[in-house]
Length: 292
Ligand SMILES: Cc1cc2nc3c(=O)[nH]c(=O)nc-3n(C[C@H](O)[C@H](O)[C@H](O)COP(=O)(O)O)c2cc1C
Image (tube, rainbow, N blue to C red; front, side, top):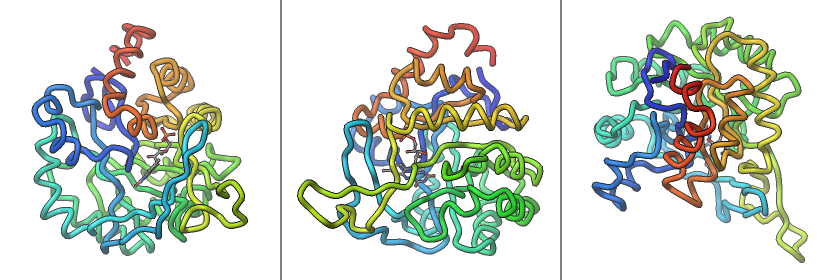
């Protein structure tokens, strides 16, 4: 078992927010889904206080080594999430981590207060790093902003708070240390890297929003470098992610200092990837994983 933020997890592999819809998967895979749930904890898609339609299509561009998305956080808003989705999430065979994002600190304070009494939630991930909304990335890439935001939010939640940082900084260690000093219980990184694609022969960006976030194997070296840098600075646990496709990739992030590893883009190719990666990881690291 692995201890992470006061939660006991059966293995170190979880999902990256926004890359695996557990409620849709349950409808499609039925009983097999309950038996073989692919992750040791489940992270919800990021929700916002108000409902959002997301970005205009097209929203995806496939790369040889991953993809660029500009989904833009479409979601039903916190009130409907609590009423409609939380009871269903609570029945998943894995602890629930809810990802939230706000456009102003007051929005996040309200969200934390509304979620605080909900026993269904094991921890909250603060998405300080979405490249697909206008205010994304700022808090997650600037130590001063990161510390100020955590200082403001911390008194409003008794939950474990995970700060998800942006990769668009040359000093993720300073941003992580600032979040830690202001009360973050864990750090997760990396979110997608900002990028753009033109369709062949076109003089216009392909994505409806113009630009998007790059994910998948293309960003794996960035993830490894940033996780190693953050791990050399903070004492709180790290959830490492970015381009994990197999047990070797996961083992490298753990060797770099991550406690947990999240699988994102690979879930689109193989919805059972989490379990496969966890068992490959166990083969590679054996007891070293089981006793973390
Ligand atoms: C289609 C898509 C949607 C995503 N949505 C979210 C989201 O809602 N919240 C969030 O924090 N990260 C989101 N991410 C980022 C992932 O959680 C992860 O940080 C990133 O993709 C790097 O991991 P990967 O290379 O394994 O995909 C999204 C990524 C993709 C590809």
